[in-house]
Image (cartoon, rainbow, N blue to C red; front, side, top):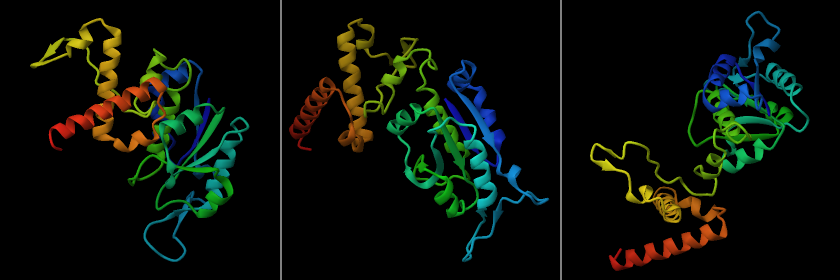
Length: 253
């Protein structure tokens, strides 16, 4: 997979590529990441990429000429069919489902804005989709770009040490993950749940599902209505919710 990032700060992107799963994917030839600086497409001595907004207001806005030129230069290096994505608070939410969708593509262009945003004509002329990594404000699109790169890298076949990790990750089935434990068996008065030491894999699976259900119901109940569960898992969830509701009734809750 090829990814290009249009950014005023290429070192922010390049510096993060040498660690973890992303570095492994790059080293194995599964992923390549390039950058394009809009400043390289300016004509004035100050390499100006921003200006005051029409209509007044605080801050500065990224100019269309250098930004669109940078987008076109970067996009030309990508395979046909690679979408141009602008990282924006106004964009659709980036989710695991979006990551899985994008990971199937030959390439992706990520545009990292700065200042108060980009001239709207950039979006109209040179962007296919807008994505948001969350409902909060950041100083620029570089960190969201790295979030997306990391999410895509781990979905590439051969990037992970154990491909089962992708299947069992939080959000993949629409549930949060269950708790994980490793050695030592006891630590500061806290012990590993006995079921995980039993060797009974069917019982361990049931326990893990129950833990995932509990966490999702308590922490992210909004996920349950959109969860895409296997029929067996859906039946187990329905039984869990029914038992939980019965228990709440017994306690008068």
